[in-house]
Image (cartoon, rainbow, N blue to C red; front, side, top):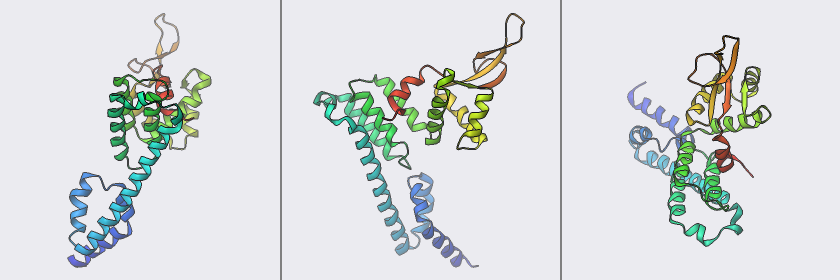
Amino acid sequence: MDTTNEKLEVLKASLCNVYELVDIMNNPVVKAVIMPMLKAFPAIGDMIESTINVKLNEEQSKKEQELVEVILQDKYTITSDMVNDVEFIINTAKVQEAVRRLATNDKVKFFGNLIRNGYLSGNHIDNDEFEEYLDVLVILSYRQIECLAEFYQKSRSTNGRLIDKDWEEFKKNSKYPEIDVSFIFKQLARTGFINEYHAVISFDGGDEDEDLGADMNGTFLGYELDESFMKFYDMVLKME
């Protein structure tokens, strides 16, 4: 196959997968490498870029509309003082910018909750706490958030702790493969909302005791929610 035919095959493949390109259009590598390649074929390249931009605008509108709907769920309790607050205006803009950068709509509701519960439900979130929660939402994937919320639901009857057989059962029944769940929770531990749970040797020389502490030597048994999680759950993850 000569070079011209190879380029045409690449172009045809790109046309067939245009909607896959939409999902990664904002990736700097895509903008720097893929789009210039497509634009080597002016007419078709422009058509692809135009199609992608239309689709992107549609998705952005959907995300922004969903964000507004979540924020205004309690619109009749919102006062002018709430929305005229400078901190509220600035932080709402930060949330809007974060939502625009999302590849999908999955996490939009959580960003909306942060604004609604933090500023428009009779509470006023501390600005540092707002920024910390916003960072968590930006960093965590939807499946990480989903797994964290599911862990909370499953551990409510065991004091926020799933260890030993309970932890193995949780992994087995997850919608995600066990190896993925193990990786996800290692990442979640970095948020401080959840901690590893280990068995450590007791100081009185007896058998192993179960104790909390990711930095302590001993057999890993599972995870336990940190007390800080409940505030984050009520503020961001809890859906009405």
